[in-house]
Image (tube, rainbow, N blue to C red; front, side, top):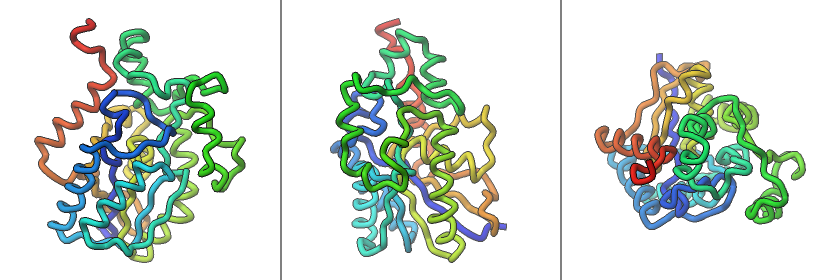
Amino acid sequence: MSKYKLVMLRHGEGAWTIENRFCSWVDQKLSVEGIKEAEKCGKYLKSLGFEFDMVFTSILSRSIQTAWLILEELGQEWVPTRSSWRLNERHYGALIGLNRAELALNHGEERVKIWRRGYDVAPPPIDESHPYYQEIHTDRRYTCCDIQKDKLPKSESLKQVLERLLPFWNEEIAPEVKRGKRVLISAHGNSTRALLKHLEGISDEDIIKISLPTGVPVVLELDENLHAVKPHEFLGDQEAIQAAIRKVEDQGKVKQSEK
C-alpha cells in the first residue's frame, strides 16, 4: 500500500546537452530551453496541486537553478532547500567535455552505452592533464563537502554513484519522507537513475534500459519501508516524454551522416 509520494527529476537542459557533450561535474547554467523546461515543469506540478515541504539538490548550478524555477512557478520559494555533492551527476572522468556521438564513432555505440548507462563500469579517470581538471577540482564548492577534497571521485560507475548517494538518502532525505514531508529532488540523470534503482529494486541488467529526459517530473509511490509499490511514473504528455527519452538514447549513437 502506498504511504508516501516522492517527486524527482533530472534538471532542465544545459548548454552542453545541446552540444551532446559529457558535462558531469563541470558547472553550467541552464540553456534558454532548459529554463523553459523547468518553468513548464513547475506550471504542470502546480496544475496538479503539488505542494512541497523540502527540496534537495546537488551542488551543481543546473540542478539548483531548476529547483528555484520550479518553486517560483509553484509560488513556494520559501520552501527549505538542502544541497549536497552526493546528488551530483556521475563523474565521467576522462570523458568530460567529449562529444557522445563522436565517441560512439571512435569506440562503438555499445561501449558508449555501457559508459553512459551500465551499472558497474567506470570510464577512465580524470587526471591533471585533462582540460577541465583544474576547473572542477579547484572549485570552492568542493571544500564544503562531508569528505576530504582528495577523496572525491575522479571517475564513477553508476554503482559508485549509488554508494555515495545512499548515505545522504538514508540520513537526510529518507527521514524527511518518513516524517510525512512532501519532498522534491532536483538532481541529474544518473543520480536520479541510481536512486530509482535502489527504491524500485531495478536489476543491474535492467538499469541500462532506464533513460531520463530533462525537466520531466518522475513520481514514485513508496510503502512504509520506502520501497516502491509500483514502477515510477513520468508526469506530462506521454507521447512527448517518450520522444524525449528516445532523443536521450540517441545521444550516444553515431550520427547518420557519419555512418
